[in-house]
Every structure is written in C-alpha cells, then in structure tokens.
Length: 220
Image 1 (cartoon, rainbow, N blue to C red):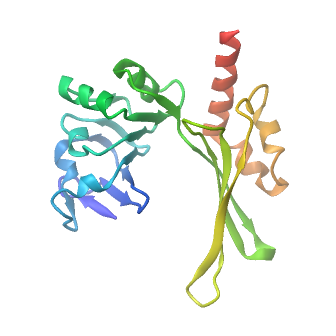
Image 2: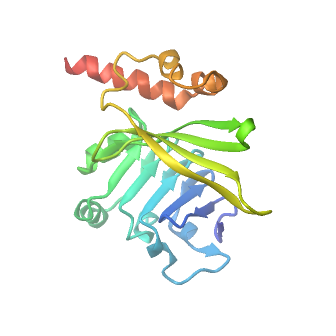
Image 3: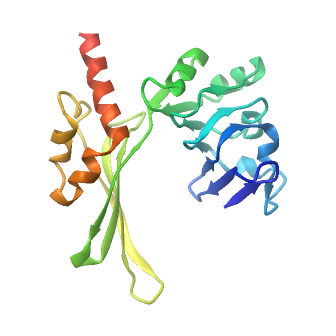
C-alpha cells in the first residue's frame, strides 16, 4: 500500500498480478502519482491495469500520462471526467487500452468517444463463509474480451500450519447470454440460500441485469 505525497486521502493498493487500485476522493492530479514510502523512479511502469475506485470523480491533466504501461483502465461509476490530450488519445489507441466499467456510465461513453474497446467490469457477487469446512469464498462474475463469462471462486481455508492458508480457485463458465430474461431473484436462485440476501441487495448486479436486458430488447 502506498500514499500520495500530494494528497493523503489518495491511496494505492498494489497487486502482484499487475493490478494497481486507486482509492480516495475528488479528482486525481499528476502530483498524486508521487507516492510514499518511496518506490523506484519508474514504479508506475510495473502495472498494466489501473482500477479507479468509487469516490474518485475524475482524472485530471497529466495523471494518466504517469502510467504509460497501462493496457486496461477500470473506471468506477463515480468517475465523471478524464483529461486527455491529442498525444494521449493517440497513445491510448496505439496501445489498444481496454476501458472497463458499468454500462451507461462515463466509462462507456469515454471508450466510445476515444475509439477504444469497452468491457463491463467484473462484479463482486458475494462472500461465502462455509463454516463446516472453515472456508471463505470470494465469488465474482467475470467478463472476458475473448470467451464466455464465468463465475470465479477464490477459496480460502486454514493451512497445514499456524499462520498459513490453503484453498485455491476455480471458475464455472456461463452461457454468453446467461442474463437474458434473468431477474435478480432468478440469478440469486442459482446459489445457496445463505447467499440470497447478499445477491438480491447487490446494486451493481441489479444494474447490469437491467441494462443488459434493456440493450437486448433495443437491438431486436
């Protein structure tokens, strides 16, 4: 975890997978890319996916240029603006940067405006605690540019010694049109009853199902 030298409310959460998450409030600026504890001079080059979390409302001038290796930009629904230049627009298209976010948000409009591919963001569905197996599963609906969507299970169980963890992960592939005619209640019915409340109160899932079905109707 790293903190912006310019704004203590801006926090970076780094992942070994190449994902960098940015949390905070308001508009990010170029100076927010200077962080502490001090990292390498070109630390931004270590990441190919930048996820801008809810609470951040914009990416100001010079911010995106600080991350030249980004190939996927994930924008939460609170983001309403991204400052670009002709040079940056050209770079985004040259690098075929994938824009991800929810339907009917700035993220989708931004992708269309800049001539970039758009893909709906993954949806965290629920956390499943299976007491009898001392297991905790993080369940996510994932979308892919190639291939069918799937339900991904990231499973955590106690390890063989104190302080260690076992578990694993697996995915269950879905039909490409799994959402067609599917209500939130119907979707939740595919999971154990203990997850029903989490699923039926999942606003992002609800918005996706409603939007995806609305778009299908309009195409007919």
